[in-house]
Image (cartoon, rainbow over all chains, first blue to last red; front, top):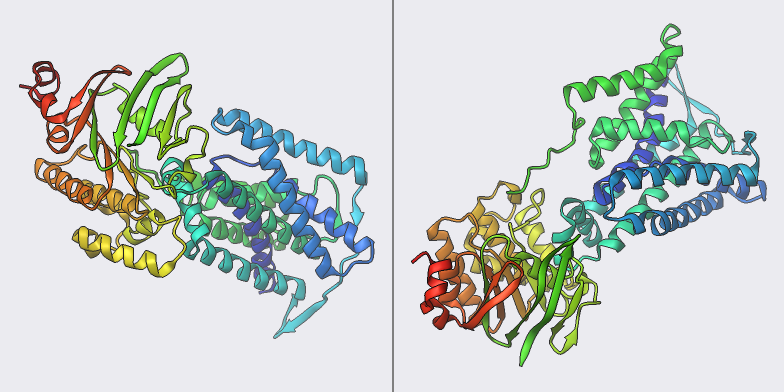
Length: 287
Length: 236
């Protein structure tokens, strides 16, 4: 019971990160491999704020602002000039940005892991199960954020413009949509979600290092691919699925050492059966 | 007065010169056609006017203002609207959502709603299928949707790129009736067509485009009777 619960809340973290991958892919048609490192940027923003004596609420705000600024600047400086060039060039640039962020973090904060003085939330008992309050907060807030995002994309003018750009950039421009602005907004939203993910992540493991974002980044990317890259509900389902599988594997002693292997095996299996992912859409070719 | 004036427009795809410096104009209140075979540069012309592909040299003037350097999305609120080749409706969105996107520059929700009602009277089929996903519409219905969507921005200049493509003769007639009718409401029309006969029959003037250059121009009626046009484009 508590395993499932922890799995759901870890899944919510993966889902929040996966949304950043999937939205940017859907709209800018690029894999932003530096996205995982935005979580690291958020974690250091939280670390610094808390170390300076700031409240955890303030830390969250600082993390969101810093991550959004990073997301927008990275898009403007590194990706925008490459728009329309080969996908390989963009992919390599993204990997370069990822190393750049990690290296700069290492220069500023050092390579060693540092403990983040997070507030401890303790746990509560429901029946016989002991449930961590951090997990509850993660799950509830994560769900609210994702519901909000879904409503935003479906029902607002900007959300509809995002859908339009994701489907056909040229036609979107003919509607009078500023495609560059929509791409920028997408990066900003993705980064804000990553900032939220970083605070939830620190609530589970209160320690940060320059390579903090790598593993959750890869897991979340896997989640996005499992769900069908480009699909928002797909990223949520993929993230939750991966989180639950991870926690279940970790709770079974025989399987525990192979947890990561199991997760990627699931990815391979799903891609074998359904190459476009669970909720991915096959684009019809235009005549 | 010319509402749209294109001067020495040159567009290149890599080393290939798709448009070799073409000039033409569309006067206020006219229907002007650009006819020509596949690959003549008609769609390239349309896309470069709306900023979808970069111009190498030349100028495009709209309503007395040079628009080459204006980002394409800003041209829509200025009164330019285009129905692109292949319709390009948003397949995964409903008819209603497509129409709402057509009014992207319009922020008044009440006005958008009224305009959608008006479009649905003009195109009853769209009204019946408001909630249907656009990708499930037939080709003809998608063409109607693309036209309705372009009309949502209340253009002064409506540009249509191959509206008859892939439609049955009956539907082609319908589409041209709609264009004629819409023109009567005071909108200037620039039409690109392979179906030269149909296009010339509703146009005031026309230009013949051949491998990136304009080879003929004149009154539509004259071109309809021109021997070389007849031979090359009307199949007579």
